[in-house]
Amino acid sequence: MTHAINSSIPHAPLTPRQVNWVLFAFALGGFAIGTSEFVVMGLISEIARGFGVTEPQVGHVVSAYALGVVVGAPLLAVLGAQMRRRRLLLLLMGFYALANGVSALAPSYHWMMVFRFIAGLPHGAYFGVAALVAAHISPPSQRGSAVGKVMLGLSVALLLGNPLATWMGQLWSWRVAFVLVAGIALATVLMIAACLPPGMGTPRTDARRELHDFNRAPVWLTLGIGAIGFAGMFAVFSYLPPTMAHVAGVGASYVPLGLVAFGLGSVIASLLGGWLFDRFGFRSVALIMLWAVGALLLYPWAAQSIGTLLPMVLVIGTFGALVPVLQSHLMDVAGNAQTLAAASNHSAFNTANALGPWLGGMAITAGYGWTSVAYVGVATTLIGLMIYVVAARQGRQALSVQPSEN
Image (tube, rainbow, N blue to C red):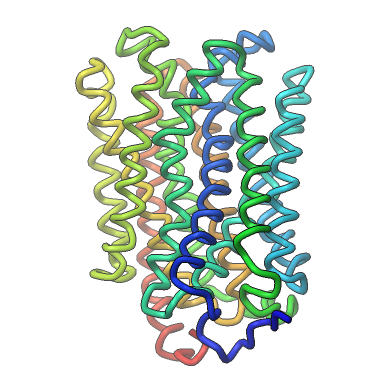
């Protein structure tokens, strides 16, 4: 009979091979989520033609999904606090498969908005719970590496899944892309059921204690950095296909190359972010955001030619190093709110995913041009940098006053 893991045991008694299979299953779920989240950006022109709307309006479909993540991450984290982690992960990914299946059947633009909002609900909770379970079943010295492997699925989706789904959507129909995502999500359900033994995972938590520890300044400021400071990357990436067409002057066949470049930058970011945090701690946030400001200022110039645009898109993809950095910092300052904070980190990033396309779309609609999204990104990144200055002080206070909570 399998026994639940006691909270005093540092990690579950799984063999390294078993742990790796569990992490692969979690990463496969991240691959499905990453493909679904960003494929609308790759197929923005096809979806616009299919529903008879403008490309900036399709940007609002991206925002609808992101808002679903913002709402669903904390809500499902609290509602699932007393549920066994294995069962919660299976339910979340099963729901994700269903929501993407109905997205493929959306009869109108407004229904597409609704279905994408629903599809976003389990996103943050899945990543949050998967990250905590990954850290729990791994040796303490490999906690960051385990979380990075889960997040790597998202990065590989940007590198391979999104270009593949975009190519399929251009070749047949944008609806095929969401059918593909639903199939990968179902495969994830089967893999988690097969690889993660019943009873394994982090101990169940008290929702009231999570809410109490969550409501502290270091947590909220860290989330604020992601919610605002990360919006610049999404402002640029959301309108990459039309920028390639109208500014760089290339055809639709080049769009998958742009997505591959961004995905490669994201893979580098997943590996780089953990290394930066291990070396510089929370200060690495400032390094990443200053790097982002410099690249965004160069983006309007780089966008004029495909030869300079593709390398710049790769650089913009490296802004994703902020994800593992903030995730790791939250583990240090969240106290007993680990589940809620871990899920809300993705809620914060998807607030940025909603904010960036919305602000970028406003700038484009106002007539400032496709590359004006870069200046929108500079503004949001600088605001995030200001929040970091305050959060750094609050984080040091939390670490000195509450060392036993970590």
